[in-house]
Amino acid sequence: MNRAPAAGSRRHAVDDRGSVTLFLSMTVVGLLVLIGLVVDGGAKVRAIQHADSLAADAARTGGQAINKPNAITGDTPILDNRAATRAATAYLTTHGATGTATVADGGRTLQVTVTSTAPTVFLGLIGITQITVQGHATATLVRGVTGATP
Image (cartoon, rainbow, N blue to C red; front, side, top):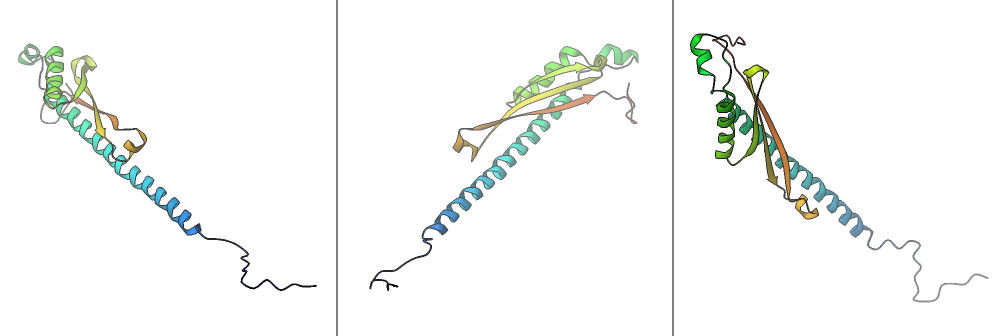
C-alpha cells in the first residue's frame, strides 16, 4: 500500500541551502591570499632593487679611493683599502642603510653588500611585518678609455 504524503509536508531530495555562501567565502579568501602575494611580493622586488642600487652607488663611491702613490708613479692602480671601505660605508650610512664593504682581488675590486628591510601589507595579518633583503654590487678598477683591467 502506497501512502500519499501528508498535506503540507514537502520532501527535499537534497538540501543545498548555503552552498553558494561557502563557495563565495572560499573564493574570496583565495583571492585575498593571491592579492597579498602579489602586493608583498612586489614590495620585496622593489626592496631588492633599492638595496642593489644603494650597493652599486656605494661601490662606485668607494671605488674612487685609489692608492695615489701607485697611480702617480704609473704602477698598476689599486684601491686604498681603508679609504675605499670607509667611503662606501659612509655612503650607506648617509642614505640610512647598513652594509659591508670589502676590498678583494688584490685591491682591484670593491664588493658591497647592503641589508635592508621593507614593511609588508598583507603578510602583517599573519605576523610577518617586514621583509629583510640583501643587495650586492662590485666595482672593478679599469684603466683607460677601453676599460682594460689594470
